[in-house]
Image (cartoon, rainbow, N blue to C red; front, side, top):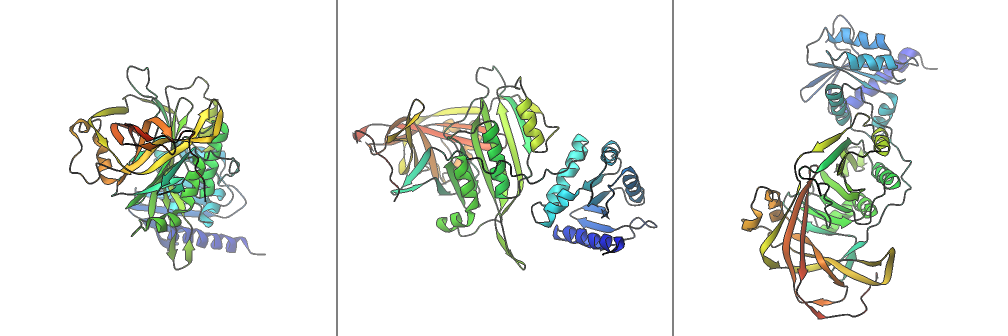
Length: 473
């Protein structure tokens, strides 16, 4: 049986390896706190850590925290204390970390260490988040366990399909030049009927790591609150972006990142892509956004994609009378101290074009016609069009789009295709004379730029009659 000393030494070496993999320069048994011994001294990007590794059955207690602070007092003021424990911390130790913040002490529990071991958490992101929560909220934060209770929840597929050159797809791709505009067919107005302001916003930081984590949080939202079939998503790379509909389709598109790149014939890909999902939520909206580190090659072999930043934002017309379900969400995601914030300015702005612009249509946005609560199998309607963006690579937007409120629309000059919502739908299969863009709506969903181009058509040249139906080959 391995002795306690050997187990402790092996644990120290493992923690040193995790720190080294996280980009830190490591010195074992450093003299930084001389004459006291230090397990590990770690440095990276302007931060210096004094690290203690505790591999024992007894939990880290107040005495251990005080002992680490004694060591910190023998170092320079910028050094941060860190303790990795294989057995957890007592409530007293956690309270001590929170109450006395004259010298920062960060703690990693056994669950977080396990996630780091299996590459399901990013050490630098954990350290950054722990420091923020301790400094801003006075809380010793511990990342939630990787949860999977809602992975099996059936997500909305989305009631929209895109037809381009007779090919049917759940999403479409467009060339872009570092633009991050998000096309959506609906922008819920949480400030409707309110003289000023836009309602209340709840921001939550997530600890997503894998696609299973992504599916789980979407499953939670759908199970507890209900997502719609009209949710929109956007994925952005350096030279290409993808837009589609439905939570299930969103997850599928995130998973098949390499297949997307191959189909789009992407010349070069950044190591990360931004992914966002936007949907109607109760009387407001919900936005899930993040950065996905796409798979890459290293000396140790092929690495899977993972998320290294993710956030959730919910905006409502006001703070709900019954906040129980939102409090449960906050606790589930490890945001116990989150709060609704008043949004004091109007966020949705609409401009009509003085002269409607004829569109060069390359595809159709098609969905089923609904009668009451039933989807009609025999008919589908065209609810929007995909067209060549008339503002792509232009020097300036029309005068009516140059106001401060519409300034974010400059992103449109960097996206090749435009998704235009039709106010007047027609049967799939009808032949239309011209499609016209005559209005643009812009809004911010937290940090995400929402763009809703809209228009109509002039006349039906040839009516199909009973309506068409997409048929997959």
